[in-house]
Image 1 (spheres, rainbow, N blue to C red):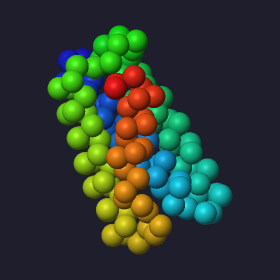
Image 2: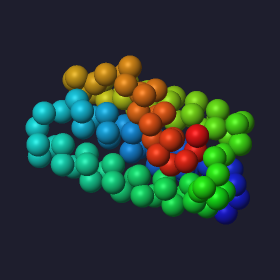
Image 3: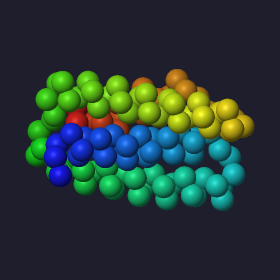
Image 4: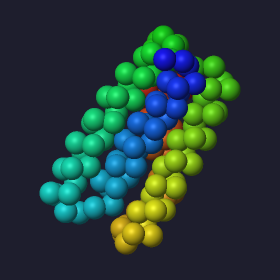
Length: 111
């Protein structure tokens, strides 16, 4: 698989994980929250696998990749959460997006 495709799949799975993390913080129904937790774990593991294929995990990515990934993930997460808000989801805090993205990128050694 080429590097661009790996980056695309990494961003997509990371975005999905972050969307569900934010949805989990917005919900107070344990049954629904559990489903979000499962989705976060699944997408996180897939994103982690793609991250390992992009370049060695013990090194951060080049700056141009970092900026591109960060922008893609923030835009993707924000767009998805806005769609959820339009569908009637409540208590979603869009201001959490940059914070969650930054934390996730650090955990995956992207930054």
